[in-house]
Length: 109
Image 1 (cartoon, one colour):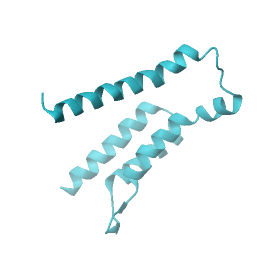
Image 2 (tube, helix red, strand yellow):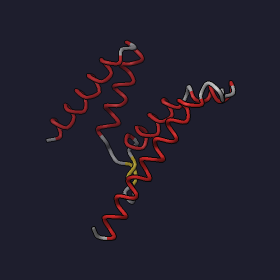
Image 3 (cartoon, helix red, strand yellow):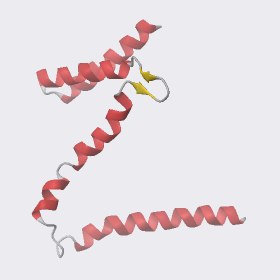
Image 4 (cartoon, one colour):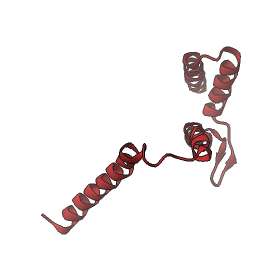
């Protein structure tokens, strides 16, 4: 084995151990170390914050060095938001957003 392979395998094992330890800690000690109410309330917003952090930068019509540009994803996202506000149906949001995105890309050629 070369030194590089040992380094890669060691990194994989250490990252696996870190992941297991941090995740297992909540399962093993969760009943003995309860979270304060403020932390519990804050953790309710974690999924929405993570989703926003992933989607918003991809949908913003701004490119480095170019500035604002027209982007089909933004239009599809706006259509999805409007469908959600009207129907409150997650499946319709996905279908309408994707159909809008595909239609705009097809029309653009």
